[in-house]
Image 1 (tube, rainbow, N blue to C red):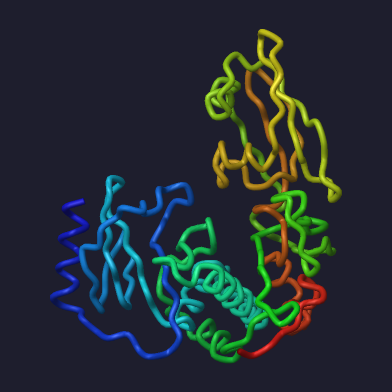
Image 2: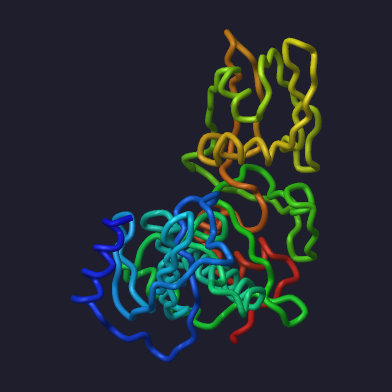
Length: 323
């Protein structure tokens, strides 16, 4: 904590700069999705306009530092379009097609406006982690800057309101419907064909000892785990776990991902087998599978489809509008 405070005051002294008058977004700098949020009794240590380094990354804008029993919390207010650039830089692959970057810019902006409208009076509108959408760095790529500039102010709407523009990294075959993941339904989020190709997550394998699996889900002496049900798109919906005492636990695959870690279990599109007291997950894809598939958008762009066509494909019924 002392190191963070030192960095803060060092940056205050040497990099003070104002925030422009354009529309802004308030962002809680959160690197882990399960990290504690500021409590109601968190106290402000002050606000500055300047530059700060957190976990090796530099952020600029209006910075408020709050403190509570969980430590320091940094809320970064910065211009919306600069934030969108940073999200696209954090979320997209290297050397991606311009039209895929434009599609990402539109949905990142839409996602931010949706949460800004949802949390107008809160200290922050959304976080910088995968709890919402990743913002890790300021953009330095001129192609990303171009993608954001050429779509400036554009968002996806339904009934004249910003949509909840979910997106994910990789799906293979079909996208998922939100009812299967969160129990929520949106008319513009349907299962559509997705033709992502040559991705890092076309196929993957993960191994966990039965002991480590039991520690993650809170069940001792696991002897068996089986798939109990599937979603309508063929992903795993629930699993049935049995221990040596024949006690049975049913757990949602989405909850298992959270408990094991989203990187450790990349998606719910998998099958399982047990060998030598290990459970082996063999699967494909990365993420919840709902909405736009980033690698699928990249493939569509390679095939000559523009960002409007990409958005129409993944969000059927949504209308692209300029704010």
